[in-house]
Length: 429
Image (cartoon, rainbow, N blue to C red):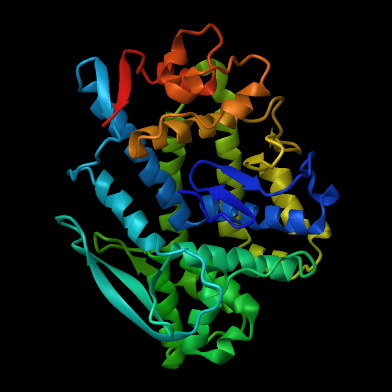
């Protein structure tokens, strides 16, 4: 699933983004301000991916899906197997977790203008599970009789677009009201005064993404504001409320936000590292993951108003908070309209000699779409055409897993072989 394609897109859980630009070098302060603003928007999605409870939950769910499908392949006789593979309900909750991500994501299709007539919370049934039978969803009723589900997708886009407008007022382009202003419209439905402070909206979006069901979290807080049960004197007070209050786990135990986040983060770190377990390459790969996660903990635990500081600086090219992020953790894999992919390695005292082999996440995504959607061709063809050791050919389009017999393994073939899939060949149903 690509996070919305208007002027660019981000691929959640696989750390890749595309900018609709001809800027060849992708150096932010040398790009046209409009292009740099789009890059900033997609970079915010990257930060949401690694720094929110919802983002980490999605990384975990996708990783568990991949591991489960590969283990299912191992159980088959060596030879051909059908794609796409069907994920069945089981006691390990892999299907449940993936279903929850899809349901809480909500709708993100564009609507130029929206007027909300009503907001309702409905229960979606889940497959039989001893801990969770239903999941609540937020339904928005529009004046044109359209109905959408308001969830993490719309909140993520609203938050990124809001940061665009605050940090780059001369560079952002007007976007459809849904999903890009959905959070503001929903908040206004409950309390028009609250919406006047854009930083409060930003804080509520950010903190809603720190829950497992962002849409529900957002509207419940806004409903409490409408009922005068909650009030926030400042944007910082929104953060204080979430950080100070205890929350209940599915098991019924109480925990605080940061402890729940750290627990999930530790699990996700291991999931990401389990994709690659080869000594000669995993050092830079592991180090980048550790750098990213340390950066996030420093932010969430010791500098929880970080995004407010970013939002209060309205010149993108001199935004120290944005620059600090890139300095500490670099960027995801970036592509543009010139078929070029670029990666900026972390700089500063933690820098490694070569940075992270970011293309492995792109290859993991290719195999994920093969297994989940039955997509055969590999989208790394253009990338490999620009790589001196790669040998792109017709197999990339028809059966990239057969490239394991080549002397120089591309990232796709390398993973196929590393995951002990050499004796298995997928075929379309």
